[in-house]
Image: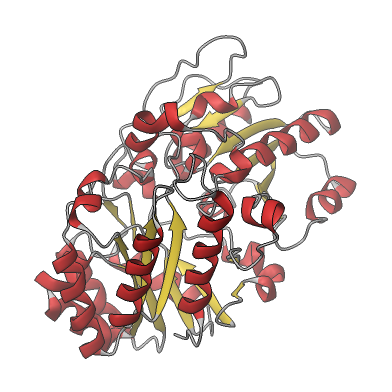
Length: 432
């Protein structure tokens, strides 16, 4: 079958820019659509697959449709891209007879959102194996039988489908991502703020924790699944001479034994790469020796979700951590010479004093690159269920984590100006 996989364009909107002319809040990183590369890698042995990345080339779908008529079109995206995904689906439905399938984090968190006439199937959770099963079934018949983790749409009725119990079998370790399908886009994949080229590799899916604001668990049903050491090394090698590898995991060190073995394997393979990985602060504090092992393996920087600077607010997020631990982890990482990319979440309820306190914490603790987002109750999270009555902005285009979708305590323009000032001061001189 001829399969077209589509990465939607940058479609998020900005309240501070549209209402107040504040542009400095935008934080855009053009990275390869690894989720589609992973799907494609499990299809290319039997099917013709093309990836159209509308973030890198806005005409890529047009170019494809001028030459081919696909049998299946797969579209993925985040919450702020969900409406764009629907628009793409409507266009595909109008222009060809392909079966239209959507997946990704929003489809896994709120599959009912995509239960409409322009879409045929919704892949809920990890799709590497379930999407392959769907494609193979469609190659044999007009409609697929019931496949766990795949919902056939039924507009006007509630979705009904078999849940999938995810395991390492869904990672399909023996089929690598089809990195080659996006090689022609690769010059567009860079972190503009740092002028840095990166390649993406996944070592794990899911997360063993349950933060109230996070929808990661919806991809795996709460399971934490590791790729084999051999497949991770293979994928790193596949990226050739790209100097920096972003380990695109929610928590690279969620399995300590696996993390130690992977660090040893990377050192033994002599890959000569720098790595950027996600880690929890309590992992750093409880296992500084592991951080040292990874430093020797090439770990250049870590992304840590500090989130807040008060224990009370961390508890509200069900973060299962304390500010004291966060601060200790910072000291350990500085001693090791590992760059800290610190994630912080500001609440729309912030006062000027809380903005000032956060700015002082970032400066006093010398966070190398603070990444500051606005607390956004995302569909599919505990936080969304609790805060839904407070939401005043339902347009998902604004769910970029840089807009307040519930009322701010401060006058809105004052809130966004403080936010912009934090971002500006935090990014001055930032480097990895």
